[in-house]
Structures are given as structure tokens and as C-alpha cells.
Length: 594
Ligand SMILES: Cc1cc2nc3c(=O)[nH]c(=O)nc-3n(C[C@H](O)[C@H](O)[C@H](O)COP(=O)(O)OP(=O)(O)OC[C@H]3O[C@@H](n4cnc5c(N)ncnc54)[C@H](O)[C@@H]3O)c2cc1C
Ligand SMILES: *[C@@H]1O[C@H](CO)[C@@H](O)[C@H](O)[C@H]1NC(C)=O
Ligand SMILES: *[C@@H]1O[C@H](CO)[C@@H](O)[C@H](O)[C@H]1NC(C)=O
Ligand SMILES: *[C@@H]1O[C@H](CO)[C@@H](O)[C@H](O)[C@H]1NC(C)=O
Ligand SMILES: *[C@@H]1O[C@H](CO)[C@@H](O)[C@H](O)[C@H]1NC(C)=O
Image: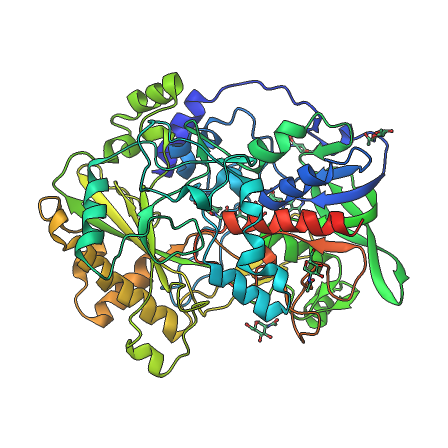
């Protein structure tokens, strides 16, 4: 499917753009080499911070971004084209995992946006903020009450701009307006393209008590199934680029450079006996190296893969690993690149007898007409993301796993797994069938206990690091996904689906007992691309971790980290919303220290 999408995206790509205050190559940067702040990565978090810091005209900010411009990249604008943006395009870092020993040794693509807006420009646009208990756990674990939900939720109204869905339908009962902002930076909306299965999902929630209706999964209370909220407004993707950066690119004190890969941080003289960093070395692939300096702080916002890679290249990490590559250790910190946590996704495909599905659009038969509708009116299938409903569920408290394993959810009202309903065949691990109509009910491990690593493969900053999410390496994760498959089968066996779902498709059809389900999982599951934890935030006194609760790099002066890498535990949900709130708070912390 990705290949198909790509063909059309390229065919319809609009050419030409004006670049405002954006430099497309490091060589264009004026000779200024000193800025108040240097932000590494114009991604989800980086652009929030750049935008907030330059609200003060006296503060000079340089943003260094390895990727390309997002302007006029149609697949980054038209929501339903998201699957064509990654993996393996110029908008993707092109990472792969190492062979996953618990997934039949499969090597999984591990996309990350390499484009202005970072992964917010390349993702699937599902948008919520996790469970209140995710934030309360961070507050408790870090010993800093200001990370609690009660404090964090103040950033929702400054971040979010909830708008009517593009089809203008009545959204009463589909979300709780009081949970949301209408005046923030990022446009967010409910699904803008109604479909026959919507009513079946809602009917199922009133029939089966294990799948209750949740009137708003974006308000901190995640349990139950509800209407998806997404970073889409007026039928087009919103991102940290469109919402935060582009609107302020004309600020004279903001410089953004594309094609600018940061190679490493450069130390300065120690401050109060602590190592300090103020220099950033960067350049384009095969281009010359440039050096710039931050008089106040360097903010690393290169994401869960880029941030630990840059730290390691700069001599911040486990000494043994650094020595093996002859990198002098500046700070011995064994936590850098460790505790990688990610959500494992299992798309469960069903054959359906209904014909009102999106399969013909996805496989191309009716794509041109759908795209033309979107081009003309920004409505229809293309104006929407890949799911209208999702929800968060717990394993029963009586589940046998809890006799041997502590409950890994972040709290009693947080979930163990997620269910996402898509009205077509959506499965990165399996080729789309050339005919037929399908339903995909994905199950995702939300509270995994597997932990992985990001390590350097080489001292070459342009070489991909070694990424090992170590999926399904714990009995909890295996148990959780197995039970989720059984629950998904119960979901589609509910009466509203009786004249719709014909039966399971592909390897799912061969599942009966636990062993066959486990085998299906190993053959099909993959990442939903939510890595966190590789530069974890821990308390000031913890014996491990990479940043303190004020997001400052432990044991150093001059560096903060603000991106998904600092989240110590996965949120109950898709990760962009939590990263946006974290970035708003990071900007506040940085300003408060001025
Ligand atoms: C395909 C895909 C689908 C997803 N779907 C969803 C979804 O539907 N909903 C959701 O909530 N989340 C989704 N996510 C996850 C979500 O997008 C990310 O968790 C979030 O955007 C991460 O934000 P970040 O700021 O940590 O990193 P990013 O947004 O990735 O930003 C990092 C930036 O740093 C740049 N960078 C990295 N290294 C360097 C370097 N050395 N020098 C200079 N620049 C560098 C990168 O190019 C990038 O622009 C998805 C992710 C992907 C990849
Ligand atoms: C939390 O924030 C308040 C207000 O900014 C501040 O006064 C307080 O010191 C913070 N608490 C911690 C533990 O950082
Ligand atoms: C920032 O703005 C000030 C005036 O407000 C100006 O003197 C300075 O040159 C600007 N710096 C940059 C990098 O644009
Ligand atoms: C980035 O810079 C390199 C070296 O100057 C150049 O070859 C390449 O085309 C540039 N890439 C983009 C996307 O501009
Ligand atoms: C990983 O996180 C756990 C807590 O979840 C902690 O005990 C452990 O020390 C961390 N490992 C490293 C290397 O930081």
C-alpha cells in the first residue's frame, strides 16, 4: 500500500515554495555563530520550544534540523496519505530494528520523521494526552509534583485548538468540550468522514460491558472506546511546523536551518566543577562542519533515537560503549540509550461483506476520485486519518498473569492495551489483498515491560544507530497481546457486526489456542513507532536516568533535553500529544530560568 500511495503522492505533488526565514542549507547561515539558545531538531517538541522562546524578541534562537522542508509535500498535508510518507522515503530517517528474536527474527522498519515538524509531520495524526495516571506516575517517580496531570493539563488550552470536523457533523456526545482548548496553536478535530461501521462500533460499546463507551479519550480518563481525535483541521494535517513554527518564521530572532545534521556537542570549560557544553557542531552529509555556540542553553529535541545518538557522539553515555568506539567520556552515564520502551502493534484483519470500506481508495481503484474531492473541497476519505475509533482497555484483575507479575499499568484507571478500528485493510506486515473489503481491529500493548536499547554503530554521525526495542521479551507482553487477540475476536463477534464481518483474514484465521495465537503474534506484530525512555527523566537523587525533572542533563551544565526520549514510561495513548505538553512545559521551565 505504501508504494501505491507514494506513486500518487509524487504524481500530484505540488512544486515550488517560498522559504521565508528558513535556510535550506548550512552554508546559507549568516556568519553569526552565537545565539542565546540552540535547539537541535525542528521536530514535534523542538518547534514548540523555538516558537515559545522567540515570543521574546530579545532572545535569539537557532534551530538545526537534519531533514527537508515540509512545504507543499502533499503526502504531509493530505491526512489519508500519511502511510506513504514512511518508511523508506526522503522524509524518513530510514531506520530498521535489529532482528527481533521474539518476532521470528524479523527486522522491522523504524520510521522517524526527517522533515520540518519531525514525526508530527510524518505520523498518523492520532492525538490525545494519555492517562492522568501517566503524568501522576512521572510526578511520583521524579519527586516533582509539577509533572502531575493537575499541573500538566494547564498546557492543553495553550496547545490545542479544537475545530469542527471537515464534514461539519454534529459532534455532541463525541467528545467533552470542557477537556479541550479552542484557542491554542495546534488544530485538532474529530473524524471528518463518517462511515457505516461507526454506528457498529458505538453499538458494540453499549452491548459488551468489557468495551464501554468513553465520551472523551483525550481528557485524561482513557478507559473505554470513543471517537478518535486527530491533528487535522479543515481537512489537512496540522503539525509542530504548521501550528508553531511557520506562523512565526518572520521573527527576526529565529533562524532555522534545514539539511543541518548535528554531529556532536562541544564542551566548554567546566562550571562549578561540572562538565559544560556550549558548542554544537553540525553540517550536511558530505558537507563542511560548522560550529555555533549557545550563550544560554542547548536544547536537544532530536527525538528518542536522535537524542541518545547525539549524547553518545558527544561523550555522554556508558564509558565502556564509548571507549569501544574511542570516544572520550565526558560524562559516564549508563542510562543513555537504555530503557527504550515502545508500543507493540498487532493489526487484526477481518474479511467483511459490507462494501462501504476504504479498501478501494487504499488500493487505488477509487483513489483519484477521492483525491480530487480532497483537492477541491478538503473533504472525504483523504481528509481523514486511518481510524475513527479507538479505546483503552484493562486485562481483568483476575488474569492469571497477575499472580506472577506486578500490574505494569500506570494506575488503576490506566490501560494495558489499546484497540483501534480501521475501515479497511491496514497492516504493514502483510501485503494488501487485491480485492475484497476488510475491517482492521488493531491491538496494541500499552503498558509493555520489555525494554530495549539505542547504541552507536559507529562514530560517523551520519550512520544509523543500532536500535533494539526488544519486543515481546517479557511474559507480560506475550500474555497481554494474546488476551488482546481474544478480546478483539469477542468485539467483532458482537451482534452489530453479524451482517458485516465474514471471518478472520490471513494468519489470524489459523488461531485457536494460546500457542497458535502466540505464533500469529510473532509473525505479524510490529512497532506503532512510539519509542520513549532513551534519555529518561528521573528524580534529582536517582541512581539512574539522564535528565532531572527540570529537563537538565544530569551532571552537566548548559544542556536540556525536551522530546519523547525523556518520558520514563509510555503514555496511555499515542505519543505526540504528551510530547507537545512536555514541550510546552519545557519552554516554560527554560523561560522561568532566564
Ligand atoms: C510513522 C509514524 C506514525 C506515528 N503515528 C502517531 C500517531 O498517529 N499519533 C501520535 O500521537 N504519535 C504517532 N507517532 C509518534 C509521534 O509522532 C512521536 O512520538 C513524536 O512526534 C515524537 O516527537 P519528538 O519531538 O520526540 O521527535 P520528532 O518529532 O521525531 O523530532 C525529532 C527531530 O529531530 C531531528 N533530528 C534528529 N537527529 C538530528 C540530528 N542529529 N541533527 C539535526 N536534527 C536531528 C529529526 O529530523 C526530527 O525533525 C508516529 C510516529 C511515526 C514515525
Ligand atoms: C512547581 O511549580 C511552582 C510554580 O512554578 C514552583 O513554585 C515550585 O517550586 C515547583 N515545584 C517543584 C518541586 O519544582
Ligand atoms: C534580534 O533582534 C534584535 C533587535 O530586537 C536585533 O538587534 C538582532 O540583530 C536580532 N538578532 C537576530 C539573530 O536576528
Ligand atoms: C544537503 O546538502 C548536501 C551537501 O551540500 C547536498 O548534497 C544535498 O543535496 C542537500 N540536501 C538537500 C535535501 O538539500
Ligand atoms: C531502567 O529503568 C528502571 C526503572 O524502570 C531502572 O531501575 C533501571 O536502572 C534503568 N536502567 C538504566 C540503565 O538506566
